[in-house]
Image 1 (cartoon, helix red, strand yellow):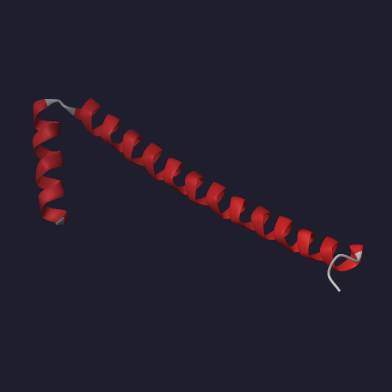
Image 2: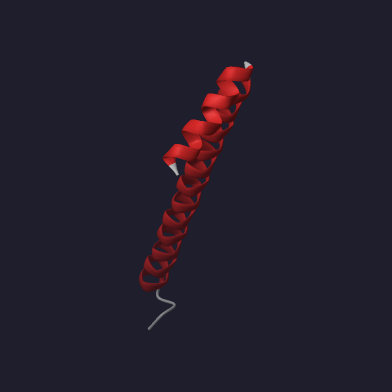
Length: 67
């Protein structure tokens, strides 16, 4: 796998397509960053949902509705 990437990078550098490599690297990093942010937002949403659920349980216990 590494050999194929090196061969591809070598052919691009020989032809002067260094900008394409830079653009590909930027797009890859931006995509990974977006995926990580999406994962963090989903985890935060789950934590908030858990908090609201526990708060509702607490309120039901202490309001006298659940006896």
